[in-house]
Length: 143
Image (cartoon, rainbow, N blue to C red; front, side, top):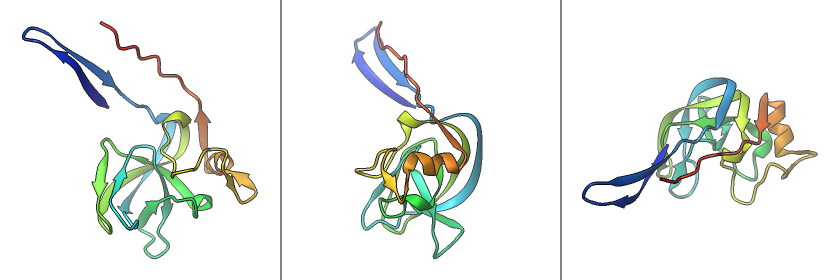
């Protein structure tokens, strides 16, 4: 959820409230420890893709262009978290169900049509049990 204040006077304040829905229906979740294994600071957001950390199976790490075939879930956190290199965070991640494809946070340069071996990323996620839905946000900020 994000709140943006547009104007403020002595007697009136206008705020725009936006709530993102990544997980739509019939979702299942698991818990894990997220490890920032990137060389710099990372902002973990709702809808980011994760893969299993082969060095420590209790941990998940961010998906990159090199490991898209290994995606095991989609991050389910309430807020954005800024993590330094090697910093960890207890998270939940979705493992199946209906997902809003417009709210997925993909690695830089990656789309759902990016080739992953002889499949697309969309095929990989569908194979995991995610049903990607295109949704429209009908929010109109007007007072």
